[in-house]
Amino acid sequence: MRIGRVPRCKTVVLVIWLLWVAIFFVGTPAGAAPVKNLIVLIMDGCGDEQLTLARWFKGAPLALDDMRTGAVKTYISDAVIADSAPAATAYATGIRSGSGIIGLAPPVRNIAGLPPAAPALALKPQASVLEGARLLGKATGIVVTCRISHATPAAYFAHVRSRNQEEDITEQGVYQGIDVVLGGGRRYLLPTQLGGSRRDQEDLTAVLRSRNYQLIDKRLEMSGVTGPKVFGLFAMSHLAPEIDRPDLAPEQPSLAEMTQKAISLLSANKNGFFLMVEGSQIDWACHANDPAHLLSDLLMFDQAVQVALDFAKKDGQTLVLALPDHNTGGLSIGNRRTDETYDQLTPELLLAPLKKMRRSAAALWQSLGEDKSPDNIQKAVHQDWGVEITREQAQQIADLAKQYGKEGHYALGEVICAHYTHLGWTTHGHTGGDVPLFAYGPFRPVGLLDAQDIGRLSARALGFDLETLTLRLFVDATQAFPPEAVHLDHTDPHNPVLQVQHQGRQAALPINKNLLILNKQELPLEGLVIHVAETGKTYLPLEAVHLIRGESKPLPAIAK
Ligand SMILES: [Zn+2]
Image (cartoon, rainbow, N blue to C red; front, side, top):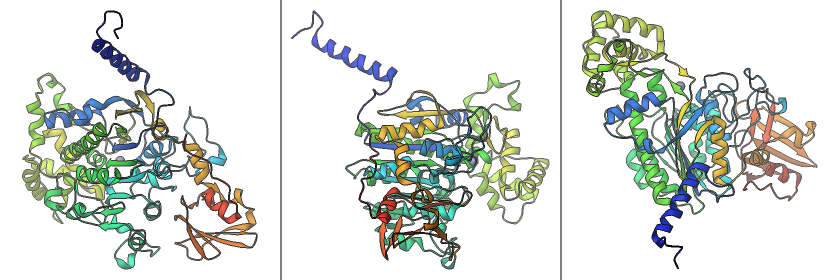
C-alpha cells in the first residue's frame, strides 16, 4: 500500500525522524517502560575546563563528548559550595542535604532562600537508588579508586551524620548486600588486632565469606572471579593515582578494568543492574593543583565511560549518566602569564610542559623522603616534571609545603603551574559553579537540573519511588513501638544494639547491620538498622517491625 505518492521507504524514514525529534525534544514519554540497567559515573571534583584540557591532551574527542545534555546545580542545604557527601547524597537519594552528611536528610538549618527542613525529618535516613535497585531484584555494584568508605560511594549505600564515620560506612556497605564492590579501603574490613582499622574488633572479611563473597586483592585475580558476589579491595587505603600505578602499584587494576569486570558480572542478573563508578581522585588532583594526576585520572575515567557506553549501545535498555559532583581547584586554561599572549597560545605550547610530567605531585613529594631541602626539590622536579626551577622557587615550595602540613605536595602545582604552565588555579578547595551533565539512553535528562533531580530521575528511570522506599526501609523505632519498649544497648560501646520488647517477644537489632535476632533466631532483613547519635533516633526496616509484632502485612510496593 502507498500513502499518496510518497514511496514507502521515505515514509518510514520520515516517521523514524519524527519519532526521534519527539524523543529528543520532549524527553522520554510519561509511562515509558523503566530501563533495565542504570550506570552512574561520577568524576569527583571536575568541571568543563578540566575536560577541555583532557581533550587537548588526548588529541582526540572524549567518550563523554557525544553525551553532553545539560548541567547540574551543585549547592547544598547549608552552603553554596558542596563537599562530596551532600553532593552525592543528592544523586543517590534525591534529597539536598548539608555539609558532611551521607544518606540523611539535612538538619533543620538551611541557607537563605531555601525553606527550612521539617524538624521531624531532620537527619532522617533517606533511601538510595542502590537500595531501590536491590529491592527490585537487580544486581548492584560500586567501583571506585578511593576507599569504598569515602563520601561519594558511601552516599549510595550508607546513612551516617559524618563522612568521617568510615568504620560505620564500611560495615553498612558489607551488610547492604552489594553484589560487586571494587576499589580500596581494605583496612576498614579488619579489626585493629589483625592490622586493620576497626576499633569494634569485627572481622568483616569473615562476614563477607559467610555471605558467599569472593574476596580478592590483586588485579590478576579479577579474571578468575565468576560472581555473582565479589569484594575486591586492592589497597589498605586508596588506590594509586593512574599516572603512578604502573610503577608504584602494578598489582592494582585500572578504573576501566574494574568497570568492565563489574558490568560483565552484574549484567548476568536477568532483572538488570545498578552500577556506580567514581573517578575519585580527579578531585584530589585538583585540590593539589596537579595537572599530571588530573590528566591521567580524568582520561582513565573517560575510558571507563567508554566501557559503559559500549555496553549501553549494545544493550539498548541502559541509562548512562556521567557527571561531576562539584568542581575543585578553580582550574583555568590561561593564567597571569597569558594575560597579554593568550591569542598566541597554540595547543603545542599549552601541552609542552604537561607532557614532561611523569608522576603525580603526591608521588614526587613522597620520593623526597625526609630531605625536603630546596636542592632536593629542584632535583626531583627536574627529574619528574621536566622543569628547571630556580633556587628561589624551590625555597618557596619548601616554605609553602610547611604551611600545608600533610598536604605538602600542594605547594608543587601552586608554584610550578604559575611559572611554567599556562594553567591557572584559584584554590586548593572546592568551587560552587554548575557542573556539566552527560547522559546516554532512555530517560536521558536534558537541560539545567538541580542535584537532587539526578536521584529522582534515577529512581524514575528504574521504575520505583524513593519516598515509598524510605517509608519502607526507615521506621523511627519509637514511633513503631511505645518508648518504654525500646532502648539502645551500649554494653559494648563500639557495637550498640537496639533492643525491643513486644508482648513477651524479645528482639535485638545490631546497629549498621541488616539483622533481627528474634527469640534467639537470626533473621536477615531487607534493609539496615541505623542509629543517628545527634538526634538519638534509631531506624529499622518496616519488615522488622512486622516481624517483631508478629504481623504478616504486605510491605508497600515500591515499583511504579
Ligand atoms: Zn574534594
